[in-house]
Image (cartoon, rainbow, N blue to C red; front, side, top):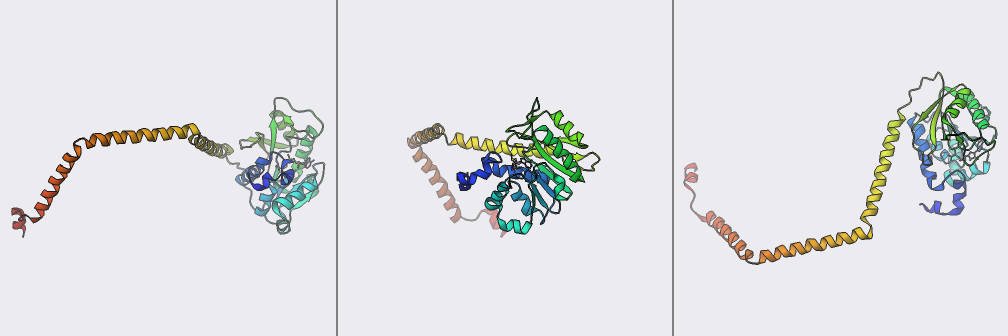
Amino acid sequence: MSDNIANSEVQAHRMLVGNPDWYDIQSANQFNLLTTLGLREDHYLLDIGCGSLRTGRLFMPYLLPEHYYGLEIQDWLIQEGIDREIGQSSIDLKKPIFSYDKNFTLTSFDQKFDFLLAHSIFSHTPEYEVRKCMKEAAKVMKPNAIFAATYWPGSVSSTDKSWMVRAEFRAEHMREMVEDAGLEFRPIQWKQHDLQSWFLVLHKDNELEIPDMGDVSRMVFLEEQLKLTEDQLYTIRNHPWVRLGHKIKYVFVWLKLLKQLGKFRKGSIKKYIGMRYDYVSKTIAGWFSQPSEKTKIDK
Ligand SMILES: C[S@@+](CC[C@H](N)C(=O)[O-])C[C@H]1O[C@@H](n2cnc3c(N)ncnc32)[C@H](O)[C@@H]1O
């Protein structure tokens, strides 16, 4: 854990958007997903509920100036993100556009987008806000736009009418809300630390070739498993009992060696030296002896 994270004062803007220990990796997951889906620097991105710029701090340097748009209701969170995560100089350079609209009025930006992102938003919103957001999204998505979002799938949809700590929706319910806005609902396999599920929202007549997210996700999953196994191996190797076992093993190895040396000493040394002496003396004698018949003929 970095010094920054350990500092509780710094944690406030991080804690408010999720588990602060995952602040970094949640940024990376979102950035990796959108770039895997084809996000390029000249695309326009709308980050719905951008919070303390957890991902904005990665997308902004990547995108061209004035291509990152953020919607957020808590302006102080964005300010904290600027002050503590990305810095005013990046804002001056990349000129992001923010809106503090409370009703998901995505048209207020007066801009059509190539990518939209709603990370950890529909995992808190009531149904009517999901519907509102989808209908607004349909108006601002370019023909081949990709809207990536997360939600918590559940066996029963939440029915609260306001922002929830954990809102769940049945997958079929989420599909119906997306389709009700005239859009296509496409679930994808993409890793997510808090176990929300990712899905894409597309125009029905899109001409997109979405890469097989399963393969990428599986590769990432296997890499994580490898790292986990390596960590476990490290822990096992460094366990006091295992280290003691190793020391005992070395004692046995040394004992065996000493035993063999003892056997060797009992008469073998003399025999060994005798053999070596015989071989060395014959070799030296060979150097000073007369050339063989064959050598004479060759000359
Ligand atoms: C769980 S946080 C996720 C923040 C960000 N997407 C991330 O991954 O770091 C949810 C964010 O949505 C914002 N939010 C809540 N209601 C909203 C609304 N109606 N419009 C825009 N943002 C909203 C909250 O203020 C909060 O910053």
